[in-house]
Amino acid sequence: MNVAIASLFLPSRCKTSLGYQVHYFANKLVERGHSVTVFSRNGSEEDAFYSLRAVHTPRNLEEFGFSWDLRKVDFSGFDVLHAHGNDWFLWGRERPRHIHTFHGSYFAEFLHEPRTKEKLRLLALAACQTASGALYDNAIAVSESTRSFLPGISRVIYNGLDLKVFTPGNKKSNVPVILFVGMLWGRKRGDLLVRIFREEILPKMPDAKLWMVCDEKVEGQGVLWFGRVCLQLLAQLYRKAWVLCSPGSNPSIGLSTIEAMASGTTVVATANQGSSEATLSGHYGLLAKKEELGHTLLAVLQDRPLRERFELLGIERASSFSWESVCAQYEAVYRGDTQSCGIPAASTLKR
Figure 1 (cartoon, one colour):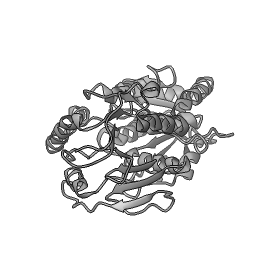
Figure 2 (cartoon, helix red, strand yellow):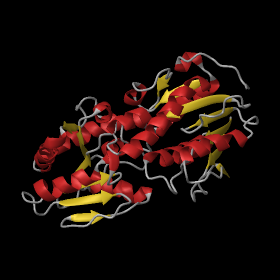
Figure 3 (cartoon, one colour):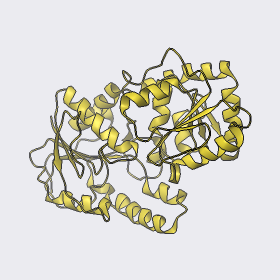
Figure 4 (cartoon, helix red, strand yellow):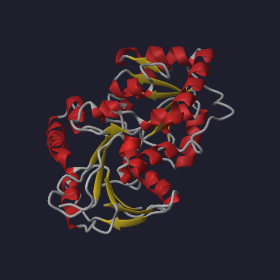
């Protein structure tokens, strides 16, 4: 099939997992024999197998601008338009079968955002996101927690994971290591983990290390900051770490949680809708209240049999997120295969 993918972000400038998901998903579709063109405001990626067409959008209000600038694109030569956010203003435009994947809910983010200015921005984005629901032939959510905030979602298809890259290792670090992957500020709450590490972990485990994979620089005793890393190094860090800590309040499934599970690393997360879904209510990872996170981390770091049990359980859980499974599900949606995906067939080209 000839597939158009629209995404504001790609890995070259996206701080979250969305850009990486789009990039690797597009590559996997090409490997499976499809012709793929990605429309993005980003430049080309070095390891891209797909074609890229730049959508030049001003940085100010880029979420709205990208969606508006997509109106200038001629999608009539494609079999499918698959948007990963920010395609809200295509009403009345000629386009093929239109699929939209929701990687999160702006309204859910609004509820967890403490800053007034950011709350107003998120509320405006949430209004666009909700109003565009009738625009799509099929609307997909990447988790049940995301689906719960958005009306009219056809089904859930999890984000994908390369199980050939994220695999268990033979040996963990010689010293206790907590790994964090995300953003220091905001809903990922890396700053919370840094404080817990300094105040609760180091006093009882002086040889412990905190590995921070985030854009914002972090320093201090026992802290090793990696910045943004390549996929291969990230996989090595997962394999070596004793624990992956996800302290965030994000209601969606954090991809780092699943990557850690696939790499044979125990997951400790603050209890929320996303982490509960990722771990199936704590069956495949440990959940803790915010104020009990330090205590839970200490307990896991000091209990090797407990870690080893959750390492094996996590590997089992991660198998549900393979790219092969994800791509096969989307291909069924692209075909309008109602028997496979339980979604009513839609018309082809429309206005």
